[in-house]
Length: 232
Image (tube, rainbow, N blue to C red; front, side, top):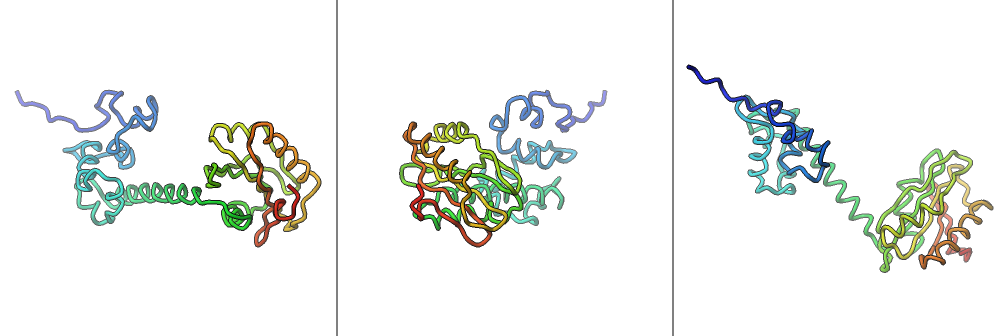
């Protein structure tokens, strides 16, 4: 009796072993690098599953994602089952990972002046048509732990949750924060609500031993610093 050929399709695997289902059920960290790549390429070849193919691709890069990121589209297409579309998908995913690392490295920059805060935050909020309020969380060396949007509002203003601001600070282990928001109108003059909010956050921070070092109003090309103007 002739034996039926073995199917290498992931659809025939146990549900616990399928990368997509595994991610949904157990989370992203439960998957191996090969399983994550298998999700990207979706399918392998008639003789090989997507996971097996992904394992071979990784092996060619010494199982190192940084090395894998150096492979060209042409290099990836040398593997049977990887056409141009799949090669581009892999390359795009790895480039996103690289950019994420670059962003994390940027956020570790040390804040030395109001100008350095402006350089950090202007690309994020300087040209927005609406107002956003952000907080820069710092460690004891004044290095950035995280930048976080606290609220988003209309051109006329935004609401800020003071409790959330310091909840995040405590979770991150921040010892200081810097406030920043944009004025879409282009004016650098702080409003009375801006001044009151600054004082409210400063007082709240003192009770938690978290310093509020500055508050910047940011526009497209310039900024106003409460600390520089002795308003802290």
